[in-house]
Each structure stands twice: as C-alpha cells, then as structure tokens.
Length: 347
Image 1 (cartoon, helix red, strand yellow):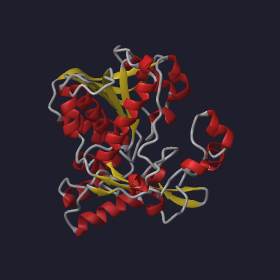
Image 2: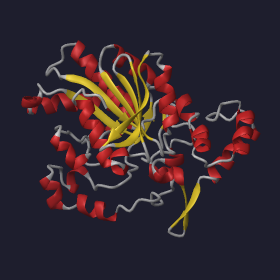
Image 3: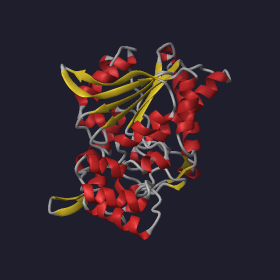
Image 4: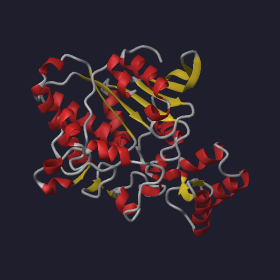
C-alpha cells in the first residue's frame, strides 16, 4: 500500500527493536532484548511521539505489521491497552490492529507447512500419507526418525534453482530461520547473519537500498540520525540479541478482541514461511461464533481472496497469489482491503 496509503491514513513507520534499521540506543545493553521489552519500548516511543504531535491524538489509531510482527503487533497492542486502562497520558485513541502472515503460535504455525505444501501440489499424496502416519499429526516436534526423514524430504522438494544457485523456497523470507517448523519457539531468535554464516540473504538484492539509505542527504531528508550516530543501515543485522519470551500470541488476541478492539488477520495464500493454513486454524481455535461465513472478497471486480468473519470484530482474510509480504506482491488488493477495513466497511 505504501505510497497510496496516504490517501486513507497517516502512517508512522517504526524500526523496532532498537538496533535495527535506523533505530539505535546510546546504551548498548538495549540491544539485548526480546518480545516484552520491545513492546514496552515501542509503547514509550508512541507516547513520546503523540506528545510531540498531539494534533493526531483524535485520529483512530491502529497498529499493523507483518511476519514476526505477528508477535510485535499484539504485544504492543496489549501495552497500549494497559496504558489506556491505567490512564497513562497522552491517551491513545486505539481502535484495533492488523497482522499479515504473522507468526503466532508454535503448534499452529509449526503444523501448518506440511498440509499447505500438499494442498499446493508441492509434495505427493504418497509422501503426505506417509508423513501423516509417521508424524502422527505433529510436524513441529518430530516424533520419530521416520518422521524427521519425511520432513527432510519435504524440505528437499521445496528447493529451486535461481541464478545458478540452489535456494530454498522457504528462504525467500525468513526460511529455516525460525527455526524450521518452530517459528515462535521460546528462546533466542537467530538473526540472518547467524543463520547464513554471514552469507547474503537469498533472493534479495539490497545493493541500491543500502547505498540510498546510507546517503547523508537521504538520512537528513527523512530525519534519521547520521551514520556516525545511529550506525550504518543494513538489510540484516547481527547487532542485537533477541529472545522470544512472550509465548503464544493467542492469549493476547483473545484479550484484545474480547475487549472490543478490532482485529484483521490476513495471509498471502502462497506463503511457505507462515502458511495461511496455520493462521486460519488458530483464528478458528479462538472459539468465536462465525458471523460472516467463508466467502470471496473482490478487488476491482475480481476475486482477490477469501475471508471469514467472527464475533468480537475478528476477521481472517486470504489474498490470492500473494507471498509473505502482501503489499509487495498485491499492492492494489492490499490497499483495497486496508481502506475498507479502516473505514469499518465490509470487505
């Protein structure tokens, strides 16, 4: 949505946690962080930002993000809601949140890949039946050597040739990084440099972005600190040590939606990193009554995906043909559902 989103909303882009993008701290201990500290720091940032720009306080405020922001968004939303309850000033006009292809829960996300790969025709019926039997429906903690061997076959079948080199489809975004079949497991979340032994991130050319974002004039124009203060911008940093310490996000979603905050959980339906099958399953597991049964939604007269609406203002939505980053793959469709949802209109 990016450039077009200015037609319907004002957007604050936040590099979080400290140490990534243009975000930095004078205290290097801040680079040892995790889910809970990041949420607290981000909440403090928002309070300071709205103190500086109080003219935006009356606007309905939403929090959005994708991928590991499946953790960042609900944990920050919870901090914001707690602050509102406690009367923390300024009082944010928080209305809801959106999560795209977001990691959420170890079991649901960990078990999503195999059924997704089978449904997409990436593995055979025979392998799927064998892996279902050997793994006993548990793909994120292999129950046996036979199960592990089957899962290794699934990995091998997801490899492609690109520019003369072998690259795993799942490495397009965060690949085996989380680690494989355990995207939100408690403990240290490895950085890309750690995962790839300092090799380049596959399938991404960051040469132009690196040059542009480290330009003194660009930094000045976007009000970012210069390299001498904030450090050099880089696509993937090993500057931080990050721990997943918030557990499953389902309890956060239950808390927030039960209190009336609106939630849109959307998924590009061609994403192998955080497959829509996991997101569909955990939203269904919340136990809310279906009030808008599974149906297509359209963009410019064409079916753009499917959605299911639940009570407590929870919506799950897919985007046809999109990979891990929906606004990148399907910008027009992304803008359409984004605009409708923010306005409280049917999608």
